Length: 200
Image 1 (spheres, rainbow, N blue to C red):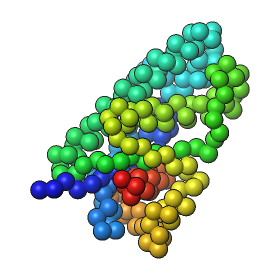
Image 2 (image 1 turned 45 degrees about the vertical axis):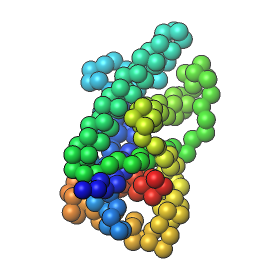
Image 3 (image 1 turned 120 degrees about the vertical axis):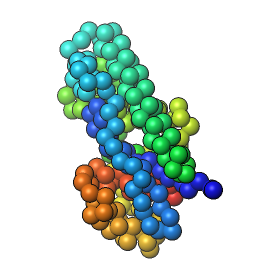
C-alpha cells in the first residue's frame, strides 16, 4: 500500500507550539493530528521567557543560559515531531514537509543589544522558539517552509490559485467536524502545512 503525503504546520508561542498534521487528497483537507507541543520543561526557571530571565544575568551567564534553554527546547521539539511522524507512518502517511508561521520582524541584533531593549526581548523570544522548531525539523531531515503570518493569505492564493478561497473556507469550517480547539492557532498552522505540502 503506498503512503499518502502529509505535512505538519505549527504556530509557536512562548514555550509551546500549536501543531497540526494534515493531508490534502484531491482538495479535501483531513486533520490527522493536532496537539500542544511543549518545548520547555515544566518548572524550569525562566524557560518559557528565556530572554526576560537572561536580562537579569551577567552577560556570560546569559549566553550560557540561553544556549542551555535552546538545546532543551530543540530536543523536546525533535521528540514531539518524531512522535507525530512515527504515529502517522503507522497509519500509512509520510510527513513530507512542515510549515511554520513567522513574525513579520526584521533580523535581530547581537545579544547585548537585545537584552538592553524590552521590545527586542519580546521579538527574540518569539524567534527563539521558532528557531528551535526549525532546527528540530532540520535534524529530522524534514523541510521547513517559513511563512510570514501577514502574508499567509497571499501564499495560499499562490499555492492554490482559484481554489484558494474554497480551501480557506474549508479550513475555517474544519472545527465543526474535528471539534475544539479550532482557533487561529490551528487554522493558520493548517494553512501553513497545506502550503508546505504543495511545495514538496
